[in-house]
Amino acid sequence: MSNSDGNNSRLTSMNTNSASSSIINSTPTSPPTSSICSTSTSPLSITPRRIVKAKRSLVWRYFNDMKDDVLNVECVLCSSVITRKSTSTSDLLHHIQIQHNVEYQHLNKVMKSQTQISDSTTRLPLTSDRSINLTKLIADLIIYNFLPLSVVESPHLQAILAEAEPSYTIPRRKYFTNNVLQEMYSDVQQKVYEELQQAPGICLTTDICTSQANQAYMTITAHFIDLKNKKIKNFVLETKEFTGNHTAERIVESLESICDKWSIADKIICLISDTCNSY
Image 1 (cartoon, rainbow, N blue to C red):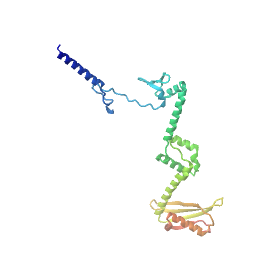
Image 2 (tube, rainbow, N blue to C red):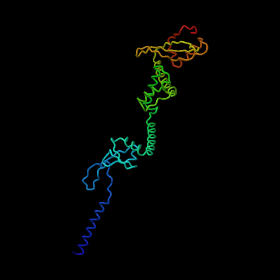
Image 3 (cartoon, rainbow, N blue to C red):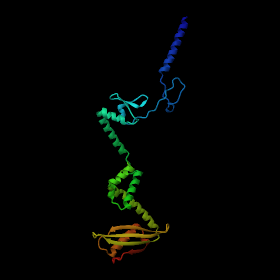
Image 4 (cartoon, rainbow, N blue to C red):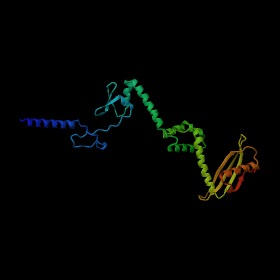
């Protein structure tokens, strides 16, 4: 063999080895997510990868999966193989509790802490639509059944709502007094005001009564015909304590104040009262 042939042979061998080394040592670029499970005809095709869901339970920090067997796991503390009856973590927790009590106490403490945080973050805020609706229903229950506000603190009512909507917490009595009932009163007051403005004429009835504690109260009620719906409507405009002497002048003053408040002074057709001589 001539020297030129030998040199050519060595060059060919070096080129071949260099090309093979270049192919083997080259790092293929990561394919897009959509091609991970696709099949390629290239000899360097990427083996499809199985997407495994992340383990959420903290107990998994003490165990490793056994290859190709989802029910068998290995304890990293004692290397014991645990055979589970299902894919739940109850058997794993039982093993930690029995065999590694120190780790179990720590794990149990952390898990309880996370549960408390989870519970606090899943509570419905009072301003959510769901909470507002439930609170309104409780207020309706109180109003239309003449119940005391203390009913919101009843453990029986709380138990019912805890079963029906665990994420909802009944507001305290003070919240109903200062917020819920005030808002409902304002809404009803506005609706009554609008209906009174549509009335062609209004008749007022008034009465003054005295309680057993010798406190006098005055009630003014408006009566009119709803022409649109062809109905007689009655609205109690106000019930207030009436202190001092029940003179005609003071009664007229109170009536005029009520009429001005509801803007109905020019709609009053008549006034009906009881047989009190003060009128």
